[in-house]
Length: 231
Image (cartoon, rainbow, N blue to C red):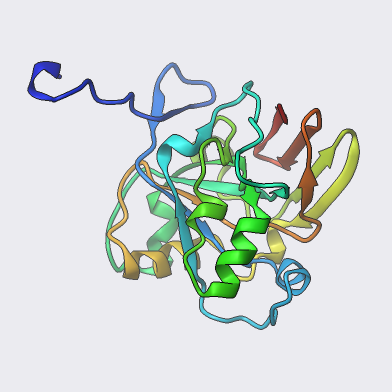
């Protein structure tokens, strides 16, 4: 790419490592599914009945790749962890048939949807978007991607997180209200999905706050683990 055509040099393409490969996965967008575990919906004060899924976005440059710290963000005193399975799309499309949705998946990872809960709460009260609570810098720690060709398409397996060695979250992929194929199909009616899109699929109950110095260690059985220190 010739850079002299731009008024300044473009920022680097956000990428994630691919397990057992020397190639990188270029990240296009990050979609997140809200309240996709019934027990988490209840702890957040909502009806756990199966309502249509809803989504919010984080920016690709919100990613924190494996081995990096999580910097405590500004303008908040209540930063929460949310442990999730991440779906990485290798093919895009619109109005994807649920029966063929998994054909669009390149692989899976584990991620943290870090949230400025106090700012999110203020936005909810005012009926405003959640971006200030969700889409801040470094709000999307994510592990390397494991190709589906290696592990298939996990539908069961523990989703867990420990803080300073103490377990704080535990659920199972089998508890997802909207399963991965359904989520992809529904999301593709709202957006034309693209290769490189990530979908954070939702978090089980037990979300809570972290402070500087805390060590987060979580994983999804059959996919991988992630560690991040709050600094």
